[in-house]
Amino acid sequence: MQSPDLVALYDGDDRLQAANPAYRDAYHCDPAEHLCWREIMRVNFEHKRGPIIETGDIDGWLTIAMARRGTVPYRSFEAGLYGRGWIWITETVCPEGRMLFRATDISGLRTEGRMLRLERDAARRESWTDALTGVPNRRYLMARLEEWHQKQCAHPDLGTHCLAVVDLDHFKQVNDRYGHSCGDAVLISFCRDVVGGIRSQDLFGRIGGEEFLVLMPNCPLEVARERLGSLQQKLDQSGPIADHPSFRYSFSAGLVRIDPDEDIHNAIRRADKCLYDAKAAGRARVNE
Image 1 (tube, rainbow, N blue to C red):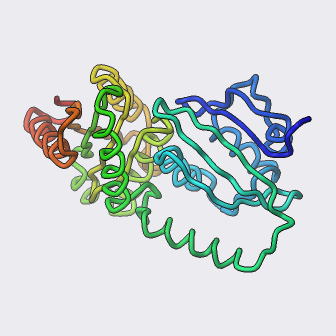
Image 2: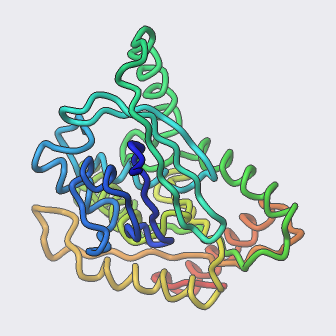
């Protein structure tokens, strides 16, 4: 007998690998296509079907959602579906990044307090979100890093993990020359480029000004270096300021491998030192 629950499995790159008929029907997707979660959500939003997404800016909504998706081992929440009522969703993330999605129809349950719960959850997300870019703020990053590090201390033999501190080059000159609104556009564009390219288990956010942090679990140092290099190349092809299409920018980064028994704050300090060295060496580079 087919389960009425929605069940799906996403891989470490957040691509749909398998789904039961209930999920395929509700989310209007074919797992044989191996679409990314963001692609599934965008198509559903454009056709006003599947999950209800209340936003006037789907790119901004996806940035916020993807920046948190997969960053905790387990979470549960309510969501609405067009023409189908409400479902209770659970997401369980394996250490290698695979995510198991399961949802149960709760439309027939009592609805008292639902709006209050939704408002509470929205307020919590807002307190953890950088208001300009939509990515996690320093408060959220530090909380997740502490949780992640505690789990790693219990299993120090599971994988190689990397951390990078990233700073946009000559950002003050962008504000001085083009204005703060253009500087904001650069920050927003940068975050969307990063979030669009990281894995679901990666943790990324803004720690202040034009400085960001990226945690890359289960990622060898050479792979982390290649990923940052690919991002640098992507920025060299983008034009984040609409009125100045020829404008380009770069970043400097300090990249470290987190030692198994190392305090996470010490890893951040080492990455900061590498970032300082990268800037002193001429910027637009990754230093280890």
